[in-house]
Image 1 (cartoon, rainbow, N blue to C red):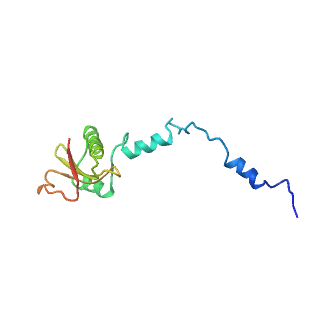
Image 2 (image 1 turned 45 degrees about the vertical axis):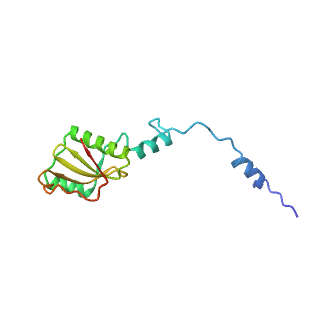
Image 3 (image 1 turned 90 degrees about the vertical axis):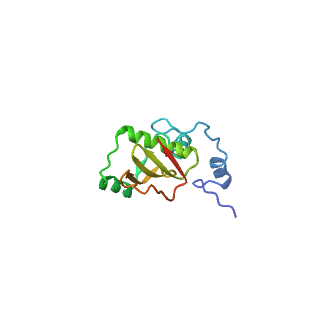
Length: 132
């Protein structure tokens, strides 16, 4: 017994409609004109964005009265990018008399200290260092 109802599509019609479509070869662009691929690559490389500070690092900056200038922030970001380019995952980045431990995959400063707080000059759980 064959039931025909014009409201439903056959399996063949659904396949033709969804599976055999020609795909648009033009990548979809975001509002700022970048494709998903470009945004993904820039995020993976950490380009175009400054490092973030974890809650712990922000607290350390406040309690140690450390204020970063724009130049120091730029250099810290540059140091993190250099560390990432070398494959470093946890990096010590030294900017002037300040030391930062940066988690490179997350582009996040996890702790910060000045010269007085780093008196022992021993840094653990890092796999590379950048001096800027």
